[in-house]
Image (cartoon, rainbow over all chains, first blue to last red; front, side, top):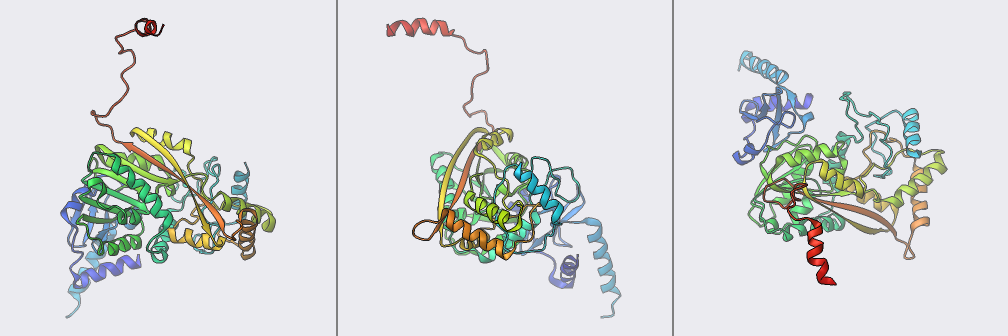
Length: 92
Length: 349
């Protein structure tokens, strides 16, 4: 969890998220659990499976689709919202 | 029976501890260890869990750091597997290489199979990164993609690949038929599935030495080898997974090492060390040394080296396609065998 939070922080810190994956690869990949299509989420730089509500990270351009690497969408979104609120409230 | 008892003993005496990285016996095989449906997995999904996939993932991370550039055994298996592609007239524009020694397969590919687009997948992120670094030195212009994924949960779209090759990886899956069915689904019709897995004869010398040493030093045995598929199971596996035109063949490699320690180092470099849920996390130093000594005295050769057997089962299967040859439906014959005999039997006389 710490690692994931750190990754999220890094993304929020201006790296702009992962740079996505090639379209040819994205066409072939599906959710490992439901075998349904994946959606690329630019905000978090991850691949989202809407069918099971899990998002899978992309690290150095390599998508990690091991079920245990995914984290549930709720936690991700909540963390992002909290971070966004924090960065907005912070006087810069 | 003996293994069942050993598993029970291991369960009673030794709580599972997944964080100990001692020199573990390595990957020894015992075919009956899971016969009684031990549920070693967490989560209670109801499926039998034999292998600790998380631990295997860390093993493969470690293998990515310590592996040598070339490995004679992995290269021999990969070359043998790729050799089959030369027998096919068909080209396979899109291919997927799974786990195990996929790095060796990629290195030895040399344009075989007419691959244009290649995806390499492993469950260890470090291994995939290593392959990606290796790719920079390759000179053929393939469209390469890398994915971290689990063979048990194949993240590949249905009917999207022309060929799937798994070189020495699938014997670590808990649900081998399930993994193979997922491979079949990911293949296009008339797609080729090629796999090499380690068979039950693998490392039999080490298994014997380990058992004797443990009996002698600890008064009991614990599973130090994973259950491996037997040759007779492999054909059933392919048929059960729904592949047509199944083909199985077996090769046996004997590798010579200077000592048992060197063998264990090699197994580590290949990421093939013990990852059973029911394993004993502790290996005492004197048991390890006794194993090495017993190995040397029972199997040592005149020149001081020790042999280790690796049995590799090669599996070939195709996804169903109307153009493939198959037996005619029962009862569809139009000529009686009696007539045939009358026609041809009389000519012989």
